[in-house]
Length: 416
View 1 (cartoon, rainbow, N blue to C red):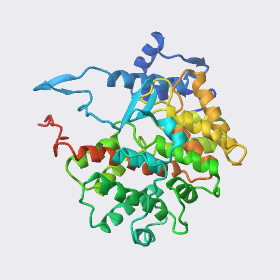
View 2: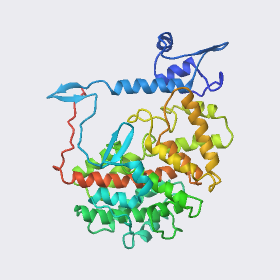
View 3: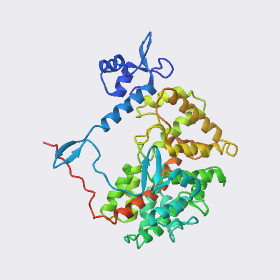
View 4: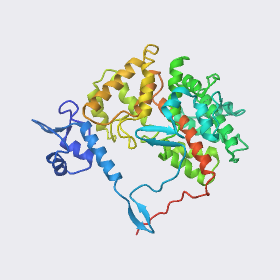
């Protein structure tokens, strides 16, 4: 899409709007005549509100996704979900998230990330559970990371470390849950230590990760917020990365390979990296740009929606985002950057909400947290990936108990 010509504050021309929706101009004006979209007339032609257009586009996407599947052969559906898989890890119901029957936000407020992971992996809840790096693994991954290009992202570094750690584990093919729990706990501890060759050992994953990512030194409230974000992001039903990880486990890939499968799918602007676009948007508002204009330019770049808003599973609110913002409010006095970050997020949220558009989601929460703590723009991605490893392993442990290779969809040939 071309950049907005600036007709009106943040407005799009008819041509830009039609291009965004992928329709002809006459179809666009049919939407207007039916009351589905509004426009403002100017001396240069019609101007459309970008946020209203995005809301309409999202409605069209949902309508398409909700269409009933059609039978193509032997009762197998197409056009809808590939399959339904029973899972006992996460439940999303009435805009709430639960892990094995317990409120995820409540767990995030009260429990450490390590304890939640251990509970999901083994069924045992140990509040003082600790993860310890595998012997020699921290030095090994740091040596490998030292030869990466300067421009390698934090997510790149996480993905590089996993096979190095796997190569040091002679028991990686052992699939007993208790063994997996010890070794993946070691993997997580090694990953957060290895991200920074200057970091010193700290007691918990949240403390270690905060020390690696943030410019703020040992603020208890910030550590508590990072821990909460980790817990909130452990699992979210069968997201794309979780399905990739679970499919690898179905083929009896070892746990490190399961993690790599998940990381590959997570490394996407539509999934685990979504907070980066929200970070950039908020950073521009913090720098003094008009929030309305920033939103319009962000949408004009071709993004599917305002970064950090809306979710296909939730209807009115994302409970993960709400808790992160609640905790960020407690940091306003202690973190100088928290005020501007939260103010920018609030400004963008007001503009989106004024148009009856989408609610803020966890990606906006991660972006605001990263800016408040002085983290790099991919800091939220790392929090997401470290957290979700815990969920992937919970799914893998369950999948290892199922019939091997059961997650094998049937293709429908459509070629010549």
